Amino acid sequence: MVGEGGVMNGRWDGFVPPECQSSSNILRFDAQQRWVVAHEPLHVDIDVNKTCGVGPGMAFVNRLISFGNFSKSDVVGLVPCAIGGTKIIQWGKGSNLYNQLVTRAKAAVQGGGRIRGVLWYQGESDTTNIQDANAYRGRMETLVANLRSDLGEPSLLIIQVALTSGEGMYVETVREAQLGIQLPNVKCVDAKGLQLNPDNLHLTTMAQVHLGLMLALSFLDTSG
Image 1 (tube, helix red, strand yellow):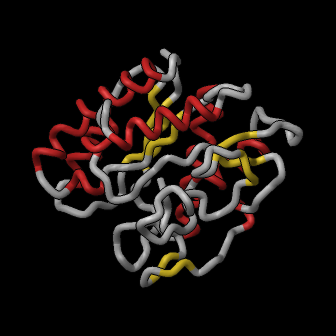
Image 2: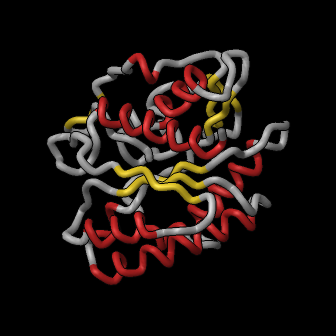
């Protein structure tokens, strides 16, 4: 979910597609828990141990505003929480990553507004051994239940992304787990076939844009 579109040899090329442009009514919750105008890279001060590039978040929200049930006068807030290269077990209840996610989500709505959904794009690291790959579905279902409980949103929309690549040989096992989840109000967008960077792991800039549009259509299909 962090996004490495445009990142090559540890550097981001700085290219921001039209679909990912900033707007005064698209805000991001920064690392200091302040609402600021959102811009790429969306996770620049969140995932600080790597070079962040273009991800799907900005394309997602721009599409909602231009083609969805948000008007151009609405303010939409993004709360980036992703950390790249992590396994889903690292997001278990009580872990630092989970606690940070819940803390940021709760803080983001203290001044009003509501959480409309969670975008979840993760799992490449879970493809490196069969134990993690086989456990993925159960861990994801537990994560959904924990988030809904701790955020007080029992029907919270979760849109996950089915992988197109991975760090190991068990990509299809994780994909089957992601595509097989049948929980209410949990959607899945399939990234298979989207173009990859030369590292054969992360999506290109335009693939990230395409994914963001797919996520937006899934959101709109669910929320009306």
